Image (cartoon, rainbow, N blue to C red; front, top):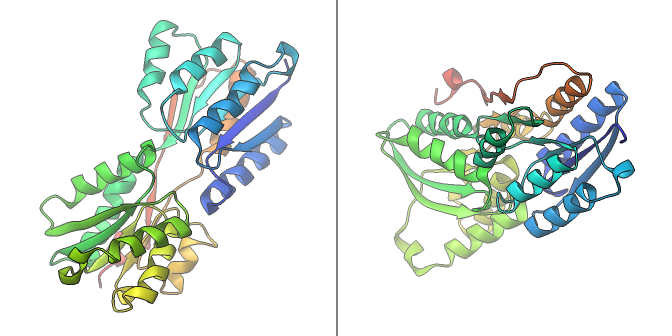
Length: 295
């Protein structure tokens, strides 16, 4: 079996996913590993089909490990089970994926790992940002990722926990697919509702910086007074969200570390026979620091 790693990511249309790919390529080059990076373009069926081809390839062509971020949890347990039977290490980039524990319970020695960011923590950081920017409370418009994505669900859960008792109400939670275009469409559709005639908002939040930009674009065209409100996002890329904060386009973002590089490091260590942890959890941080917001 080749010492090849397959990294399965969500979409080429989102900056953070592109950085995940770059991080993976840099780690693989540093470690002398062959690498295939594939994108599912936010299509769960396409992702399963792509990975199926690797899992069921002839033995000599199978990868040593699959590092994947699932579009949807559906079908992942079966796919992971088949990968393990084929002798392929499975590394998930989702936090708290229940099927991982189920598979581990069946075989404690199986090469099943996760390298992820605490997504609920990201939601709580976003809640702290909103509270700092609107200390007297208010109404928020919020852009969430796809409903089937664990990342989106966990971040919203953390956000709701963090906003409890703050006086900040989520007036609307709109769903996009992590792209600016999807957020712009969602906001435009929402603004066309008749109930919008008497609605007011005080702040706009988003589960990534790209959707925050898309929401602003729609508001500039359809509700320009709201385009001047504070906007917050997530991912915090040096040339993305952090730059948007510096330019005043975002009031704040959350810097999310990439997981593909650490995942490939973990795979390389296990392939060498080293003991590695079953789960690695990375932590996000507010940009700018929370102490500097709302002042």
